[in-house]
Length: 417
Image (tube, rainbow, N blue to C red; front, top):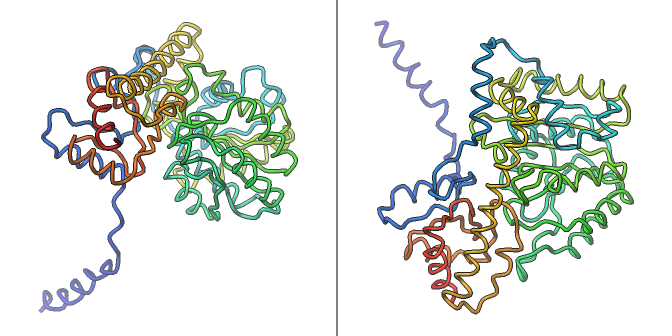
């Protein structure tokens, strides 16, 4: 009798989620799954955004290994961090971005919060803007076209409208600076604009220092609020100071920027999820108020951040010896990426005599390159050569090695000639 009364209720309960639709697959995950199923010994996965060494293996930086050993020897406890994280890490990470002599830092005009990598920093920033931004541009953020695929859902789910401005020129595979400036000029005053600080993802196309100066002046005239995403400091050019040029120029020009930092790429701490969100304010007193609201935002999201990753970063940045070693390792990674770009272009132009223009392969910077390949050409690469990349033609240069770069060039030449 009891079982008869339970069964109908149980059956009704099983229909609770019947209307949940199947979500679309992640485009990069789909590339990886297809790659894994391929049995071709020459197969290449150029979709994943993680650094690989010249043997196509994950690379743990020796400086990071040393820092881990130091942390382990200290026998530290596992207590909770504060809501905004490790104070020592926050200080050092902010100095890496803004510069140790930054007036904004010295005057206490930067509110910081440790975040769950760059993604978490962007989400905190989105939540903060949705609650407190009152500019004439409204609760909206303007992204470059194209931008990192996760930017749109992050800001949309934060409660912001997501809009766009011109950035990439498909005809030249370079920067559409004229279109970019026109669109920014046409924005309502006091709008929020997202900029990639360096190594634009997915195109690898960055403004020049001179263009950044112009953009800063334009933002000042329009009273735009710049939100910088800096996921590749040091990894782009091999020089942390060079890669921070844009944000430091904007600070110098008086902007009160928002900034997202990640240590996934430049320290190889992908799985540790280490990042920093920061806001430049008008005064020390304003910093305290912003800090109080960041804590209110973070508390119900994840309470407080993890502690293992920031301890590693703190050891690397605080030690003159490890800091120097780390910077040399970052340059090594950046130089390998630059070398692969050069070799790919050389094979296309000289080994295979391609008549297509490939200068954009070496003029772009960072982990990714926008090849200009069409979806049909991408499909041919997959079917005929077992070379996997996303349909937009973006390739991860980190997946190229000295052993397979000529094979890649041959594939690209065959599908584009």
